[in-house]
Image 1 (tube, rainbow over the protein chains, first blue to last red):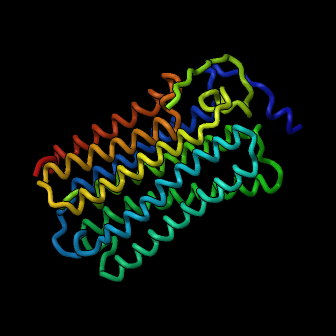
Image 2 (tube, rainbow over the protein chains, first blue to last red; image 1 turned 30 degrees about the vertical axis):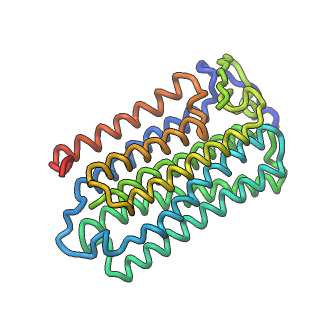
Image 3 (spheres, each protein chain N blue to C red; image 1 turned 180 degrees about the horizontal axis):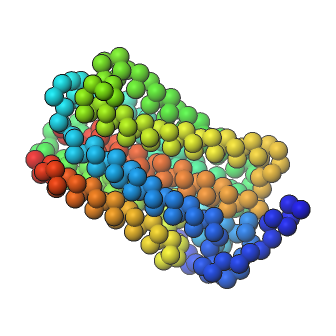
Length: 196
Length: 116
């Protein structure tokens, strides 16, 4: 019965429906994060009370965290490359490395949030806290969903359900993962690096 | 960066051909991906250095936005393979992306925070 599910199907575009759907979803996500970034920018520097960004940001720490997420895009691309070539052991290694780098990023974000809260920043305290936590929090949630997807792929491979025939599934998860990376590229610049 | 052409079959395997954008030809792209990653790492280094170097405010903003756009483009074009996809997927992604950029700029202009 499983073979029936993987039978050829018609597509008017020549592109698998799932892949088109993922790109459509990522397009909608551009608008979602665009609105959050716009809100952050509109209220940038408008807080009447502290803590203010320059008082609590640790750029060196966040740079390392951003670099880890950036390099996870490399390992994700290598995972897609490996599964296409039918190299399942390499695919597992790259998927695991990607998931671990994502976990390091999320762990780093949790530590950063905890530190900021200890410095008095919260969702309610000022406009910076509200816009910062909502923007970066939603991004962190997206990364967490990506990590769950990656571990699901690893679990499927352990069960023998991931092979070259599922290359498209790995590619689609990869598209999502790269997207969370490019969103952070923008957030890192706009929120952390641009002068206040 | 090896250029690949997209084949657009009417029928294809639901699984296994990766939607033709990636899996049409079985080239090992490891070297290409590593080259892109090295460029990304170097650009990130320049970004962080720009933050610490005391440049004029306008120049700092310009340099950082250009570098960020460069990194964004490299990931989308090479890691997400959009460079090698057909027009449909390019429009599906770049349309909303462009709209999002316009929304950000329009809101900033509306609230008077675009300049200064």
